[in-house]
Image (cartoon, rainbow, N blue to C red):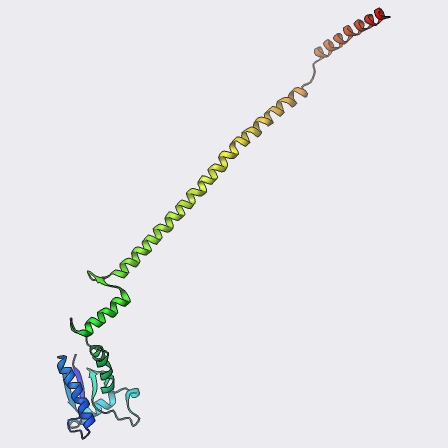
Amino acid sequence: MVIKVFLASSSGSTAIKKKQQDVLGFLEALKVDYAPLDIACNEDNRMWMRENVPVEKKPTNGIPLPPQIFNEESYCGDYETFFDAKEDNAVYAFLGLPPPPGSKEAKEAEKAFILENGPVKNGTVENETVESETVENGTDDAEDEENLEAEEVEEENLDDDSLKAPVKQEEAQEEVEDDEAKGEDDQPVSEEEEELRQLEEEEEAPEVTEQEEEDE
């Protein structure tokens, strides 16, 4: 990717010249490859720059002033936005370039990434591993709690059944005894037993009569 800097080599404005020098000097200090494109001597460069600067970035009169900076066909910004990126140590991001390893901007980007995603270890974000472990542990804990609750419910049911079993046995025993008692009371008397009962009553009757006569 080539950084294109549109400038005016023969500009009569001291301010414009100074801005162009600041941009080019800083790019050289960063060892960023760039191509200076003069709009003062090349009408094609002038027309291309004016056509490709976004409308919202153009001044009121519609004519953008140099320096204007592009990354290939993509618009990066003008001097003001370049200066803001310089102050924020974000020139590479402004240019759409990856910062070189060990550079201040790379370190800042790494810090920002760590703050957002956690430290990177062996090419893996540790936070993602921790989150996955937390989710797995949370699932295991939930399953353990459900199993414990199920066991407690089973134990309660067993206790209820063990308490109810003796009570049911006692009730069943009482019902059997009642049935036996009713069976004895309700048992029909045979004719022989009836006759024996009548004979016993008749034998007792004369003894009572004789005793009464002796008393008299």
